[in-house]
Length: 115
Length: 115
DNA sequence: CATATTGGCAACCTCCAAGTTGCATATTAG
DNA sequence: CTAATATGCAACTTGGAGGTTGCCAATATG
Image 1 (tube, rainbow over the protein chains, first blue to last red):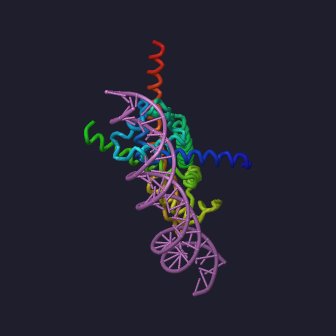
Image 2 (cartoon, chains in turn red, blue, brown, purple):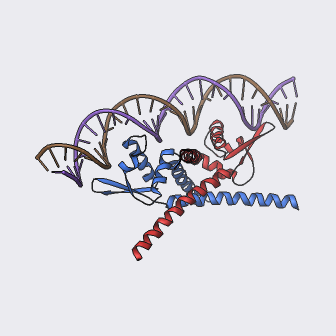
Image 3 (cartoon, rainbow over the protein chains, first blue to last red):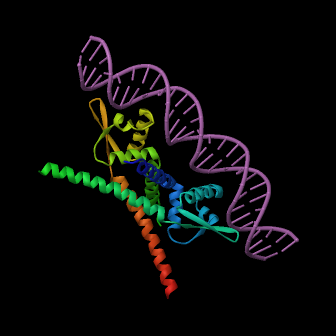
């Protein structure tokens, strides 16, 4: 493996880890769930129903935004947040690749046993 | 939504967050990558090539094990770790559901614009 | 048996994420 | 204009994650 290839896969791994980490929090998963309905929601709206402070929710939204999972648009005095599914799809594909590789391992094993 | 339903989805969310968090670390992703080849590896083997201590790697393996992503089997003086893809598949399905929901939102929007 | 290899356990350090509180600012409503 | 609403910014606290070091136990190997 060349150095360039190794660097590239390290960078991809770093990116994946960052997105996984962004989803590794119950509150943020709830936010993603809230926004997956398609309707943009203000911070105040997203705070409603949570036991947490508005500022806590804001911080979580910033984390999601940094990971590219969400983006906010200022609209008057409120900023509306909306889902951004591209990073989620990338994680899904990554998980798919790992599972697929594992399935191939099992298939080879089965082959070996049967032959 | 009934209380039972709400509790169940909260529990599922908690579980998903835990698995996501387990994958939200570069070192642990590298371990998963190492193990996705199918060959069980000892802690010493997994430590080789990392700049980290054996104990650090052990801790990461315990985290992965707690999330059900990996399991270790003691074999003589070494304990060999192996991948456990079920939780990964669950995350993949979860991400698929979110993306699908989002696609439906876009489809409805498109419909609205064209009509 | 003596020695090297592999791993577990525990104490410790450091840093950051999560959350809160307090205050300031912009925008809308009456 | 004034008051209420929605948000931003900054300081502060706290718990736990990630990492290291030191030591001990078990298992191979010569």
